[in-house]
Image (cartoon, rainbow, N blue to C red):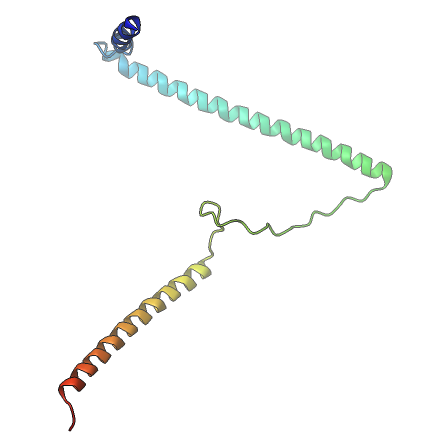
Length: 142
């Protein structure tokens, strides 16, 4: 247990020295530039690898389609037409919902305005009814 505690205390101080926390501030700019350059190179390598992968898969799919067509020709099979199907109703997930068209957005805004107008109308009617009842209570006919 004591060895663990000693290692933790000394290890933290050694890490601070290794990271350049003590002196050596002039090298930080060079280190940052080197790190940025290395990051750019890494990103470029990732992008190139992705392009090679996509090209490889495209070629493989072309070869497969060619083989499929040869089989269709050999056995006189017609190629099935791809039918565009409506996707099934998606669950109520706000991250995966369908984007609304401008017409739908305009309609919703109009409904919201009507709702506010209706609320205002109702509040005015209630105030008028209250005033009416107060006046009738003060002025009673005999």
